[in-house]
Amino acid sequence: MNDFENYKIIIDSIFGNNTARFETIDVKSNDSNNILGALNSEANFLEFKENFIARLKRLNKIYSIDDDNRLSLINQINLIADKKIGKVLSLNLLHMTA
Image 1 (cartoon, rainbow, N blue to C red):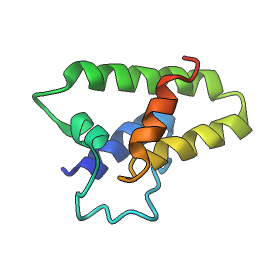
Image 2: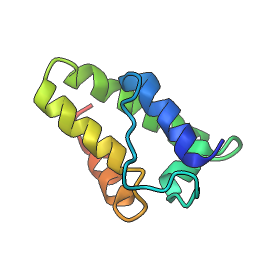
Image 3: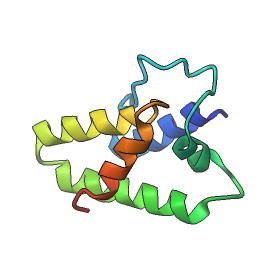
Image 4: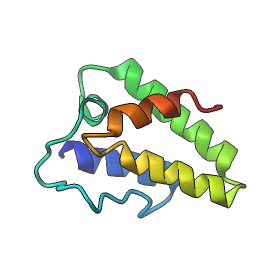
């Protein structure tokens, strides 16, 4: 399983089926970023992966009642898969209330 496929499984399992959308990314190339690579690593970055997933679950719970902010959150979570802007967006998510 490549990094994008793994990230899709994580996102869809937390936010619902077909939440992960990578329209502008060639997901077959597996030319991902460090975040997706760490999340897909089976032997390394386990603490990062656990914390990242826990944070997404908390954000999902907080924003599940606010459709406008939830949509914005999901859009940002999808953009993390973009190699160019994923790093900046993931840092922003880490500073959101959760």
